[in-house]
Image 1 (cartoon, one colour):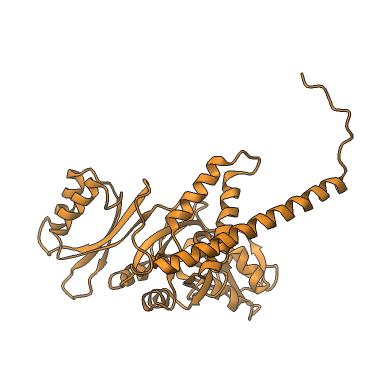
Image 2: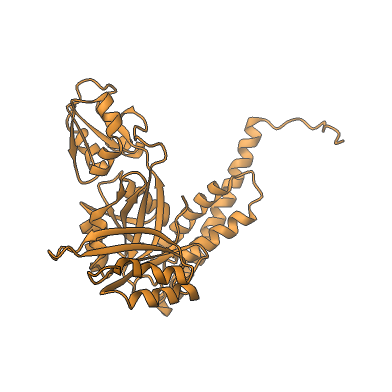
Length: 368
């Protein structure tokens, strides 16, 4: 049994001196790392290789988590290192990322989770602008909502994926909590609730119970609803705590979404020349859109190559082709990466059955 030490316990002042000293050491090491990152940037510039490598970020963070002895939790260490790498990348080459604006949207939050807080965010009025900015090169990357666990797919995003030259290089699965925000801390006198249509749908039971007479007014984003609520005392928004802080609003009711486990999936997009398809990580998703000739059994035939080669389908959505002939595009997510032999064979056979076939991207699955 260890004998108790007779040494006096350190005082709060002593401990603060230690922390100050450690902070100085950390700052020195971080700046040393930043200097090396600047040299890495010069090498990448000479070689013409991408500055941002999400697979490299994931590898570094996983290595750090594996080496973490505690007491810091792995998820906190991962968040710290993501910000360190984001700050260093900003020295190599600032990454411009198009997101749905204004500041305070969940889309912005997803971008920060993927790229870190040092990314240069470009705020867009809608997802059409996000796709256009990324395809035109005014932003190197874009982040768009594609699916909600309660309300299903974001149909506009699916339609925009059809003809864009960009592809999906990553995803973020975000736990979404909608808060009722307004100028005062009361439910009294709310005439209208402003939010994205999906947010209004996700909170419809709560709104029907607590604000049955308030108008539900769709706007381009939840943060836009919060911004507008800050201009009128009779309006309220449904948005994040960050939006409440940004627009100086009270949180009248916390987490009013009808389903506690409410997640939204965001896709990270880029032009292929900006970011190539990430290598297989062992836990990947391949997304594609197809159409088939309008004949009996055509959709069934699509599934046969997947079954034959043991490829799991994790999502299957249909959207009208708008040809006026009752034709449809099918959006499919597969479990796996095109470099896996069984996935490659399934895709080859599937493509031969399609009138239209496009791989939207292959990328690591976001943590749920």
